[in-house]
Length: 266
Image (cartoon, rainbow, N blue to C red; front, side):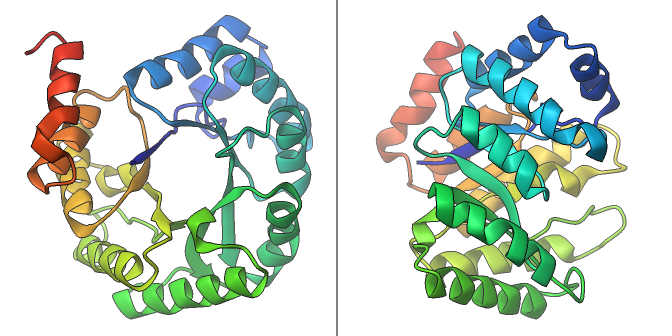
């Protein structure tokens, strides 16, 4: 199964932040429902528009989104209290916390919440020294996080690694490191999952959808089994099904053919 975490309800985006602060329930409900209809298996909720309001905004967003859709949620925050506020309202099977790193403060704040609520966890490959610039740095932090989680009796099937995609426009060659790190992670820790913030690859590029779809197919070929994306973006989910079929993960192309029939194209 491929994990599709719908990224649209993110208060770092002005269009979402304004609607949340206006408490526009119909707008948020529509954002959640559209993503599920498009193929999201999870809905990510980021209430980080203003740290002083984050707990209240997370509470409101979780109440609205969980009432509208029945998929599990991904609580996107570095603030343990905001995450707890969301989980207190909706902790469905498959719930994910987004995210932990190897930064000491983040470990101390987030790891106890993961353990208390028995959730999945997005694992960003960064530490107190920052984000690695190469493959080796990403692999080392992947190993460190795997050791951390298993040392706390958190099975790796609850881990969703994000090797931190950089924009192709400003970081030439970084995509190759990501693909290699994904392959390493799936081979070394077969129970673990991947959940990359894919659209970062196209930041600053016109017609971003072209880059997003191309990279998405490459990630599937590298063994990626999850991503944080906008599933309503044109042809993103079709690209996912096509790539899985080409790689043999979709036996007899049944998922792809079903998608085509649903879209009236077959």
